[in-house]
Image (cartoon, rainbow, N blue to C red; front, side):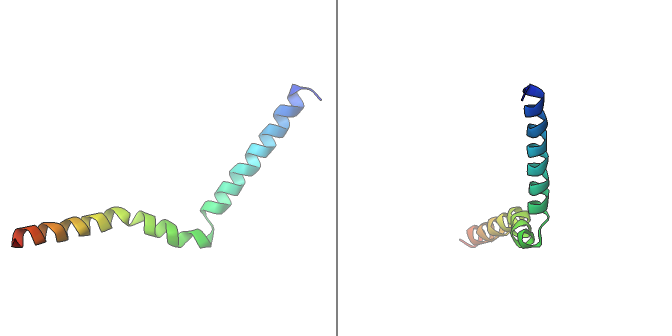
Length: 58
C-alpha cells in the first residue's frame, strides 16, 4: 500500500463526509431549528424596540 492508495481512500472518506453533511443539512428534522435560527436577528429587533418604547415612557 503506497501513498496513492491512502490518498484515494482519504478522498472517498471526505466525499462520504460531505454527502453526510448535505443530508444532515437538508433533512426535514433540522428545518424547525434552522428556521428558528434564521429569525433570531428579528427577535432581537423586537426586544430592542420594546426596550426603547419603555425608556421613552419613563
